[in-house]
Length: 77
Image (cartoon, rainbow, N blue to C red; front, top):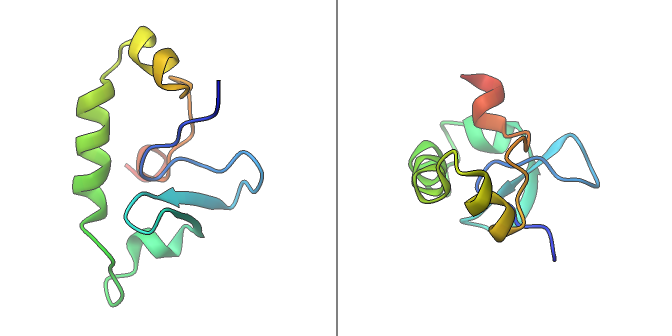
């Protein structure tokens, strides 16, 4: 099964980059917190993804995402 990332998840290949679902690309942390250049409402995208997956190990495993995935938003909260 391929790896699934939600908004803000850390890249497996580059630990200083995180997935932006709006751009469908990985960026440094500043991309998510730069108030002058926003591609989307980052917190809202993250919240929506977490609501869909919740804390269900089964849903996370079925999606290919680790329930212990490092995310820029949980890292910052």
